[in-house]
Length: 176
Image 1 (cartoon, rainbow, N blue to C red):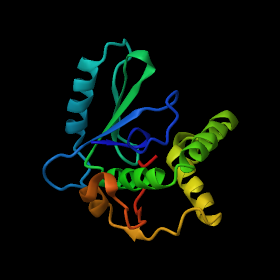
Image 2 (cartoon, rainbow, N blue to C red):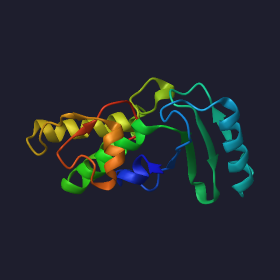
Image 3 (cartoon, rainbow, N blue to C red):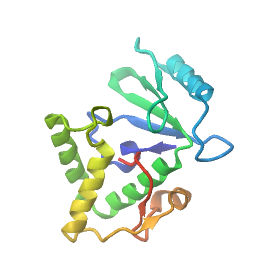
């Protein structure tokens, strides 16, 4: 399933990647074994037409297999990350109901890139965190109501209309 900015529509196409979540049988929220991500990495490598090899980041908060495809598109693949799917579903619904969110998020992300203050690896806020800050700005301005917490599993189950009651997903990352 697609999640993140590719799902929410809140990313800047020039800097966006495609985040994919494989829902593997077994425990839905269990992180995959290293061997599983290694098989994903090998499949991504085989599908890539670039000379840049796919790689696995096992030490990430959510282990991920990453590959750069033609035309500079990066694909990140995670396994069993239901929180990311739920967060993305809720943010997509908020963006659908409040069109002013998308330009605000794109502006905040452009600022953070230009100022060099984005990215977990550098101990800065992630792009997802910048998205949540924009949601909060709209709440403070009265343009978006406070969002009660909802189960990410329920948001995923409801699909594209997740958060129709005005909910926000709990859990970390992957939404933006």
